[in-house]
Length: 411
Image (cartoon, rainbow, N blue to C red; front, top):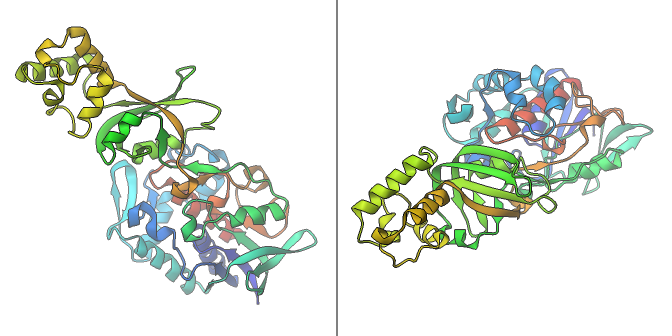
């Protein structure tokens, strides 16, 4: 089979690339290893699909890209969040904007986004071939000439767009194939690691609160040796059997380097709306009201019940001591603990649990305006396979759409 363009992968980047290429009159074949397109996209945002972020300035986008932001400037400037929103609403998918400018389909159904993209691809004239697992790229001299599939089929094209995703959610088909293809073409692949992923901690007492979600806490991550702050934010976190998770923790993970060589500490402020003086007054008020009770019983108005045993044990105050016998110094130490609940970060959870992969095809070897390889003629890369990733809030899907559009416009 011979076409103008082959796209490997029917995720958001690949489908966007295919649609944009076909709309230019190119013959396009999308090869997808799964039985249906958009498998990973269907489960993003817990099945709701945070399709983009409704920020209006390109600098706002750049501020949310810890790695690869400068490289993405060209692709972003040619396909902004407003363009993504216009595209989907033009395809009959009404959108809504929630807290943090996060954009979702009104239906809260990721399948609507997938169906709209697939419809766009097919209506533009491109073909989607499922069950086609690409095993290798084909080359003629210094240009790509097509691909070969695992079942021995050969597909030939003038251009190939690699949009295979990274290593996160391998059950959806993201198993690092694109990195292998890039290496065979002579490209550098930077070290990959999980990003937007839960974190493991060394404080075993926290595990007694596993399953507890805290919605209004302030989280700070800092380097243990220098006390230099690495990340700070306010939001929702979850205690787990291994450590912590939740939106604010996933965002924090994107800021961390090699945990093995650089020790990080996590500090949680359980009552960020109150400074220590006001919180001390609040605790004193509760102690006065429940003066004959033990500390655990006196904290029931202040803390979730599953967290109280953890705080009592970490405070060092005898569990059976009545609060009217707690000294002023002990109370102030308790207040400090409530404002600085700390644990050491010992590792990322496995990449299989990550939302995105950090690392990938070296951006210095790609043209930022077109996503074209600087090493091999006719070869393009788009989406998570490229060494660029973002924080939570719809920014990673925006990377997929922008880089897919750039590749599709030029392949």
